[in-house]
Image 1 (cartoon, one colour):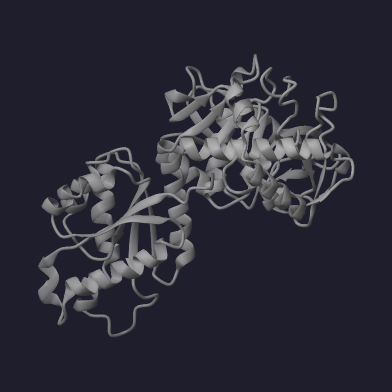
Image 2 (image 1 turned 135 degrees about the vertical axis):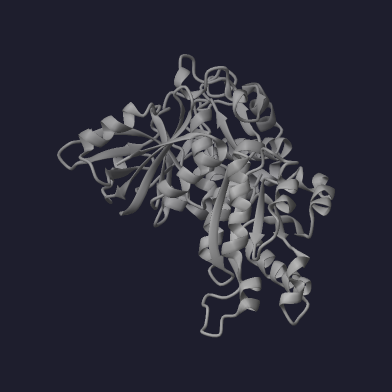
Length: 458
């Protein structure tokens, strides 16, 4: 089970009307530019289709090729009738669209001519597409950049493809949420807004028993290389955690899931003599590898984690454990889940002190997060789908006695009492995602693409 980079179709509108405006083969030139654009896009995601669109009839002919992509990128470089592009997009009405106003060069020199207007007219061609999309009430994102500005197009690509992954690829839901945790699933169930695959907790237990021994040993070797393993971690618990990881990876590969939610507090898992531990280490290792997993059956926070991970950022599933009024910050920790992308040094692997009465005390990561820009991200149904983002900073304070990944977070503008109140008023549950960097603008764009609301806690 590995993170999906997403699949896109890269389309370029073309109009032969302008071929007499240039002293060279305009179509061949656009095909060369399209190939250069494809090389840039391929650095972020899989390009399933590359096509020059010369007319609506051709656009109609590629319908089947667009059915299995997560996003469509329209690389607009010159004026072309909007019907050429819209005909293609009408065939896949739910697929997110990114309009890329693409320029070959960064600058325009003094010799700029009518020929250059034809070949460098992305600022003419792109609005021909976006205005038609807006009129059709189609959700889309837009970016303007040259071929040399890969940062801008890559950032926009990640937003758009992530929106496609959220809407098209399944979440793996194992077991039922913790009894009474009504806030972690939407009314009517997650299927009302996103595709998912539901498996019983006993399916994980059975898959763990049958985990391939060679693969289990390979995972144990990886764990020993990644962590400073405390001497109190037992070989039996480490083996069981690795078996659970192998089972989860196999189940994810079987279902094609891009994220998941597990409730291990079940008679088939933690409470079972044959399984007997909390598999937080397994969840953290999959999350570190780009397939984020939540616990307690928290499907909604799994969506938030997928959004953050799709943007290329690490995802720590956590709770705000306490408000520190004296230091104007909140304390973040969890029950053992992790993402090593937030660990600046070598993480320790220690027995999970939350579950010391289990048959096996599962191993879990223990580290603190260094100071730097940060965001908290939540996804809720209140009752409409809504992303909530609070930008701020990790302050660098450490709380090793929590025994788990931990951090301190300070909101960007408001005092902790004011900001935390706004956070709660936004309808968030007690879980959210902590990550590095300020992601408000990107999460806002994803929210728009999937038809969700956006709330920023300042």
